[in-house]
Length: 313
Ligand SMILES: C[S@@+](CC[C@H](N)C(=O)[O-])C[C@H]1O[C@@H](n2cnc3c(N)ncnc32)[C@H](O)[C@@H]1O
Image 1 (spheres, rainbow, N blue to C red):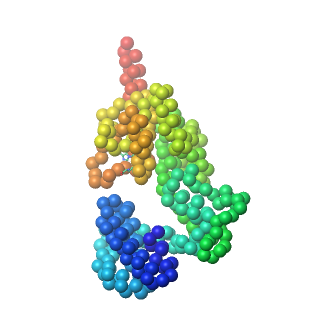
Image 2: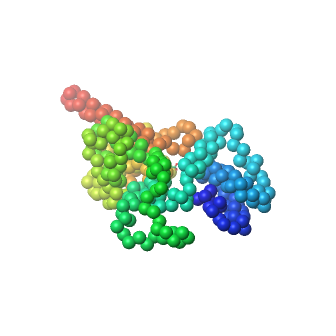
Image 3: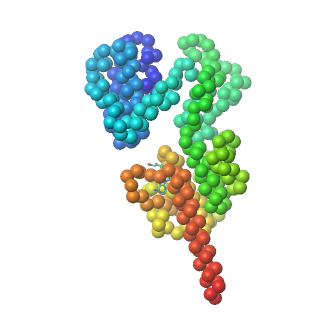
């Protein structure tokens, strides 16, 4: 947002004030320990610096002169590559908050692109029958329902979809009894079948919207299922020492926030896959696949032992 505001301010004094405050707040974030925060701050600083140059804001350029040296991204590191890639991304390089201002952008495109759960997306059709009261205060005209530019509609939605598809495929392959997702709308995505290789046709899929997930899990627990969370917590059991109960519900965390704290307290156990490297965590679909395989392996070896015991009796 910061990278879009400055050029739209009408008076130079307002621009000076805005960039002064924006640089002051953003500069410390360029060294934040969180990788994503850091590269977003760096890319935004870089874009704002270019804006200040083209707006001729000499006071700001001299006050923050050190910035110029800090935004020479030429060390070839991964961080640099990611920052440069981000600067070329749609929202940094092309998106125009005024031209692209529509009901569809606000209620559908942005929630979709920022990976909000799809229960939060509102298609523009929902607004079409209503008496329109949304007015663009400056231009005194109706805010349009749809995006004016196709490029915005075709911007890729978050990578989380790939994970839902991959997990569906893995669940089917390992014979998981039921795959639970937040919304059946994921299945109508035209990419779903190609990525899941039609796994959704062979495995029962249940829709449990996020607001009902807690009750769903409590009911499963009452039916004798162990709630096993895949998560790195201070009390997690190591996967190599953990014996899965046959009746297990495996709970996987959100790619960004992990399993919400409100659900963690419900779980019977959290299990963690031991890691050796520097990177903090695995992708959710990789974690899901490893845990499902370990469950399957244990059930298989349990069955093999039971049948060889029966034979020797
Ligand atoms: C990318 S991680 C979540 C990131 C996490 N919130 C963090 O602080 O880095 C997404 C999910 O993958 C699973 N996961 C990742 N690494 C794991 C590990 N070593 N053991 C068990 N589950 C793991 C968990 O379900 C987790 O919630």
